[in-house]
Length: 171
Image (tube, rainbow, N blue to C red; front, side, top):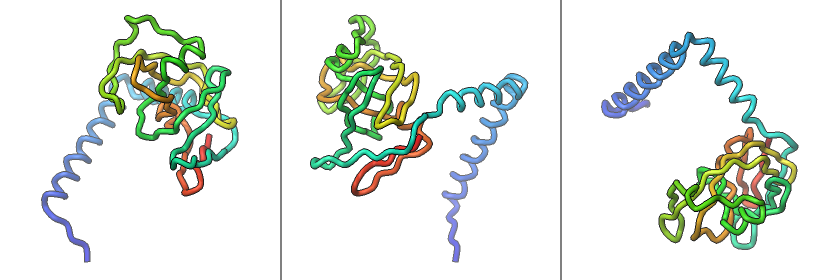
């Protein structure tokens, strides 16, 4: 037996109408073809390359990976809760990325509290051969113990899957 309550049906209806209105607006915003072509270009540029690989779960229960960022090795914690790749100031400096004090325009929440961060773009990030180019990242001014491999990298993969033994990354 299927049971539907009135409130759930109303919420679903509003969500569907909003989705259709957004799709209609995007489709007709600039003649339709231009908007669709632009989104197709983004999808092509966003893909990762390489072969599927697995990051083994560490003894502490976290997924640690040895990443190659702009050609240099950096130990990172894979963090699906992080919106973007976040670099400690020390790791960023080792990579040759040293934002000026005025570049720290963003604010992020860390375990230490709210801290300032500078947006940067990394040329490449590779984890065991799974490579993503032009990755959005933040250099966190202070309070970040280790660099995080966040969704600006993970979200560009075709899939990632956590198992009790490890995390599979699929380009």
